[in-house]
Image 1 (cartoon, rainbow, N blue to C red):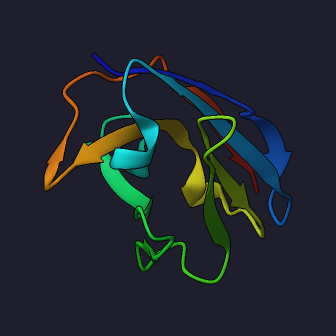
Image 2: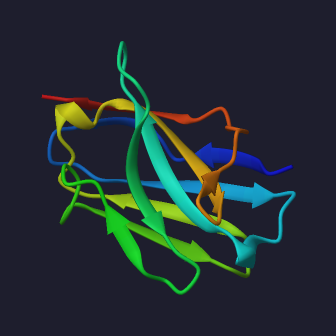
Image 3: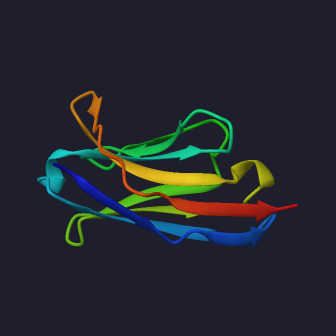
Amino acid sequence: QVQLVESGGGFVQSGGSLRLSCMVSGIVFRNYNMGWFRQAPGKERQFVARVLLGGYTNYADSVKGRFTISRDETRRAVYLQMNNLKPDDTAVYYCNAQYGHAWSSNWGPGTQVTVSA
């Protein structure tokens, strides 16, 4: 089963930047799409960004132009560069692996991002 460990979260002021990392094990990394999700207090987990096997990316409208997802096949890692952060970006951020159309049911511990106004 996939194992996911996120890191890189923190506390930043509005307009600041953070780079999240996710280390992946337990799967053949090159066979999976990878994505980031987030969950704010009292809200459901929501999709943020995805990078497909061929490098194509897609993003939630709320983060387009501010966030960039990337993957490193050698390190078996996926990253999320977050720029121009806003208070509404405050959430716990999780990565996940997608095989075909199915996301893994295993989630990592996530990493907390807090953006002050």
